[in-house]
Amino acid sequence: MLNTYYLPPNDWLNTLFRLCLALLLGGVIGIERQIRRKPAGLRTHILVSLGSALFTLIPLQTAMLEPHPDALSRVIQGIAAGVGFLGAGEIVRESSQKSQQPEVHGLTSAAAIWVSAALGIVAGCGLWQLGLIAAFLTILVLTLLKRVER
Image (cartoon, rainbow, N blue to C red; front, side):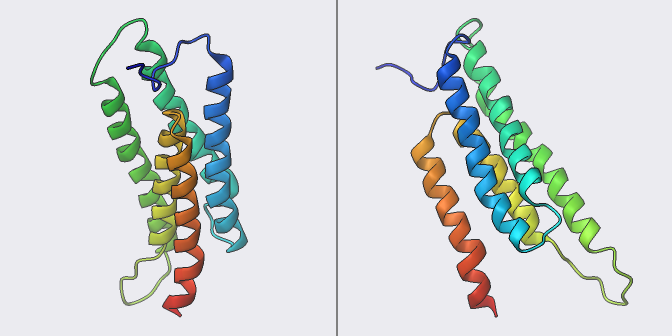
């Protein structure tokens, strides 16, 4: 069976498709966050998704030259941990109000950043169907469930 996840470094069309898919998927989440006037908006989500796709493509393209079976899983683990720092920064920034009670703000924005990273990984792996379904479900959660919470 042919492994379609790995791609040769000279497959520019497939690489371009995967990177553009990451832009699209991150942009969909980012537009929703931008409309709601959240600090992490369109550009942030696009960059998180694009960066995740880029990091994912590195082991997928270099596997043709030097195969390392754990390379992709290590990259995905690193992305998840690194994006956690972005999310934490969003929460800390939002929580800097001077109040007597400790408050947590920005959890949904942090989670949206985390999902954008996952969508970038999905796009980098070329799993466009999974990416479109996940982006659609994310938008449903961010829009419909906001109404239910009220």
